[in-house]
Amino acid sequence: MSIISIRDLVVEYDGRLVLDGLNLDIEPGETMVLLGGSGSGKSTLLRQIIGLERPKSGSVVVKGVDITRCSPGELTKVRHSIGVAFQSAALFNSLSVKDNVALPLREHTRLAPSIIDLMVWMKLAVVGLGDFGTLLPQELSGGMKKRGAVARALALDPEILVLDEPSAGLDPIVAAELDELILLLKEAFHMTVIVVTHEMPSAFRIADRIAMLHKGIFISVGTKNEIKASQDPRVRHFIDRIPEELANATAVAAHFEKYLHSQETHQ
Amino acid sequence: MANVFEDAGRRTLNELDYVGSLNIQLWLTLRAMKSALPLVGNRYRWQSTVRQMLQIGYDALPMVSIIAVCTGFILAMQGASELRRFGALHYVIDLVAVGFTRELGPLLTAIAVSGRSGSAFAAEIGTMKVTEELDSLRVMALEPIEFLLAPKYLAALISIPCLTIISNSFGIIAGGLFMFFSTRLAPLLYLRYAMESIALRDVITGLIKSLAFATIIAHVGCLEGFRVRGGPDAVGRSTTSAVVKSTFLVIVADAIFTAIFYFTVSS
Image (cartoon, rainbow over all chains, first blue to last red; front, top):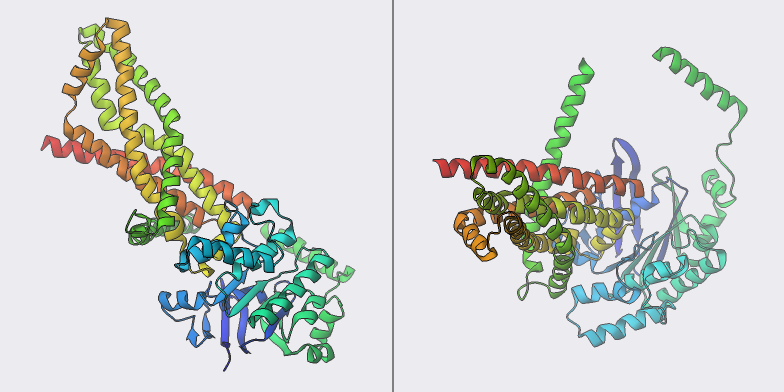
């Protein structure tokens, strides 16, 4: 049985269709990469999966609970089993890294402070921040912040780990280190991992399966080898880095003419 | 012409939406307030409340005291310059004591706190929204209303009446200093006259006002933060808006309360 099941998911913002009838099943223990270009709807899909937004129609079932229709109590329960690391890391700037990781443990468990300290140290050590717990987030580099966010996401030992653009804005070496960390976490904790990214090398390194989004629909879902072998031109454009629309003189002239016409109409 | 009506209609709807949001936020906060109480609530929330009380109350003490002393002097001097012509200089004592207890103490304190803490609430929550920290709280199954707003509101409800009492005291002391230097009236005698001129009802109505002002400042500041959309410039706008709106609403609420108390005394 799938741990996450998305059915006919439709999302609109101010009448603009962002996700158009998506269907996807994510199996327990697999690493699913949601791949797509800017504006393809992958971050919107992620916000639906973690229950931050409600869709226009369709359902997102996480561990048997439809989080688009469930009660706040049920949503809270589901959220205990999901750890999320946001693109901007979203660590609380007023708290040290250690306190950021300790926060969910203090709020949702009755563990003694000494046990919480030990658990926090373990999580920080796993992501390689064992010596940096007392620092504030603004004292960390971009890669360290992202690892701090992963440590916080791991705090409650979630069954599902969701990572939004983990390698965005990082140099290739730090990005590769994060990929290795994701693989390590999957192997050590047997988690289901969902990663949103547009970085091809990262996707091919960590994914069990890849779901490729284009203008709000899945154009291809399959293993990384299936995606690599895909002959769909939209997939090939993305993999081979071929621009879809080039600026050309004719298009610029047409836009200019349209602009002049609109100005004349106003006058 | 149609545009004028359209614009008026849109503005009216926006204002209604704002008032509705304030009411919903107030209701949700009242429901979440238990968590911020000592002993029966969450101890981390109570610790946050104490930190907020220090920021709203203790840190504002010098500013509120100086404002009260200056205003006490101004009121006494302006009153004396007119009352002296009628040989009624002793009425300055009533003017300062009653004026401060009923009106100036609560109002000046509210305006000072609105500038200091209302703007700080908007900036803090607005920044958290922009940096995805609010989303991060939600996915950790922590409701921002309970986590952020309830401690701030409870702290404001405790700190602002306390500051009001201190402001009243400093205002009355300033009046006493003026009377001592201008008429050589003994401070203890001044204090006795001042106490005689104040009724318990004056103190209570002043404190009721200060509770209403605390509600306005905390909720307008936080709502402005929650409504931030966009980037850092939006946070700046929300901060300004929080101060402008809360000061405006404090004065409107003051007028309403004063009218209610005036007519209930007269009838």
